[in-house]
Amino acid sequence: MSDTKRKTFAFHQDDLDWINPLILEWAEENEGKEKGELLAELLQSYRHEKEQATHNRERAHRLQEQATRIAKPIQATLNPLRATLGKAITKFTEKTDSLGLDSKLDKAEHRIDATLTRAGTGIDRLASKSTQKLKKLRKTE
Image (cartoon, rainbow, N blue to C red):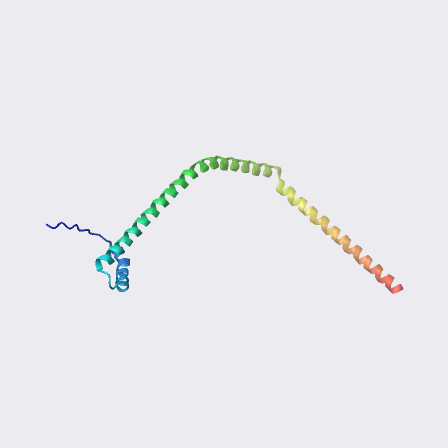
């Protein structure tokens, strides 16, 4: 037996889809280099990509855990508050409905509209009379 150690690598088809073009491109760029050196460089790059992806997944998982850990007490505090506010809104709605505020507001709105209409009509009449008096005064001069 030989004393040389052999390293083997296993790739999935998806991995080869992006590795094959790199091998061809690197072969052209590194024509004078040995193929073993080229493959070692490629495999190191591949390993670095995998380690980086694993690191990113772990980091995302830790961030998600932290967000969940922080969100739980906030939700525990907000849920009773939401329930209390919901009950208060319901009571307020029931109280305003029982007082008939909607109909009272509608009546007040109609009274205001009528008053404004009368006031507008009075102002129009006054302006008309004033205009007529001014015309008469001009004619007499």
